[in-house]
Length: 452
Image (tube, rainbow, N blue to C red):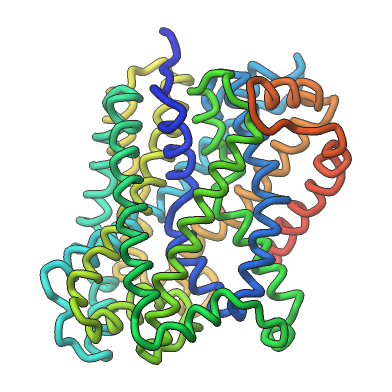
């Protein structure tokens, strides 16, 4: 059976960016900027995105395109005979399942908030009532499971169609709408009376503030965020590499995807910080920024219900773009391993994913007694820790070693694949950095993550 191909370069870029653009960009990035002092953090984050994220993404794309296989099978096509690199392929596949075990629940929260905002549930609510609504959502097993199930069902329904008619078509529509909504929201927020102070906090580096927080803490936070925002290490990017031709170099494509990913993260800050300062809301409020702080802002804003609804449409699209991309990865792995058709793989994984997602969906209510990291921690924290702190950096480290080592695929094979086509090429002077420095930085991220 011939391998499916994407219909256009735009489809490839939007799918890859859609996988990278997710809750990490529009939820985690703004609250980390708030907690780590604003503009200085943004500068350091951008630096690490270039020196960390782009090279590893280029490697994933190259392995996918050269092998023409899913992450579960790509090593078998590229590894030296008798080697055991392919074992990581199964861990990469498992990482996709683990990521979706908690991501589908959080995506369900975004959808829940869109419905609640659109139907006027937050209108006229006091700050305490807004906080209670968030707590009520978490404590309701029915609500959590229903919204999670809608996300899972929608994702596999879209992926069950052919590559071009399913995920590529829907992602193009969804990503275009996401970008339009985001720009409209950002413009509205920038011109909000009193929002200029928020722009200064966000855009002007304050190195004194950085010293207060601790330079090492800010650098570690920026390094982590730059790395995790691109979903590297579990083959989530490799799969899209396997669907494209050799017309364009892969370093150039990685830069394009990283720029789009950063643009969305940057715009989410333009939406949030001017509004926070305009309505005198604490920007360091952490994860609750989206679910408690922003509904209070929309309540005080002219046409707040409209802006709030658009914001949570934007959040839902960002979450769904990642869900669709990772589901595609899961389906492709199953098709390669078991020889299933796309529809069969979609139906079977629909039920598997519903089952695997239940512990997280019920982790704030039925299983709230399970606190893996002490009081206040949940199933989500455990699953997030395993993926973000072990699978992503550990998997990326293996991808790097495989591409630069003569015991793996090797530098020359990697560069030949990455540089096929026109565009930005991997240069000779990059070899020492990508062979010796890059793995050390990723190893530091892995060690710091394990010491949580």
